[in-house]
Length: 174
Image (cartoon, rainbow, N blue to C red; front, side, top):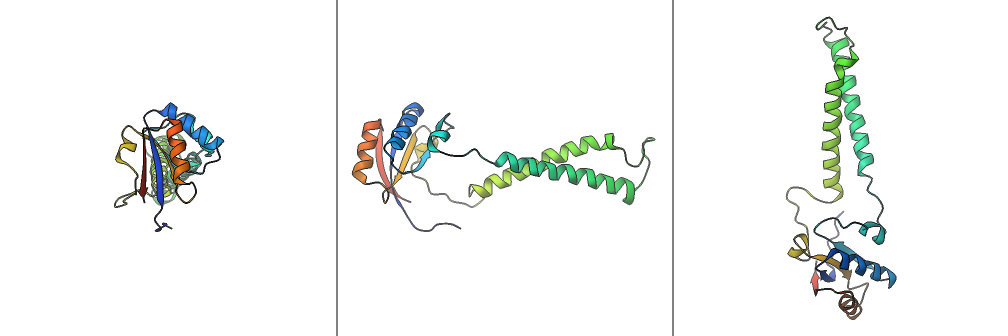
């Protein structure tokens, strides 16, 4: 369910991922409640510092792949033994080696489509979705640490950003 309440966010922009990583470590050391961290590309070592768990998307991918394998194998078993039992090229009705290529393809197809749909749903993405964003440069060349002003005072956040090397400090209501 979407949260329609607006929040006032104070955020600092950094020019380098190493400076950002040091700033996040410093924020954790000072027990500051980070609202979010935005980067234009994945930053190695950022997830453990933020205390984020590993994604479980690969588990969903395994389940979708297994569903694709079962669909292909059981579908071909039913088709070639019950629905349309023809002997092709001298093979028996139930020829498992002949099922392998189609089983592989449906395994990959189900896993790929399932993981993509799951990713979009979990992250609130998709056609027609307009996501709120702090600054256009975050997806280009800037790194960002954001604090909710209701959790961290503006003066405390600004002094933190200046001490950790932020190139800019801004406030925005999202």
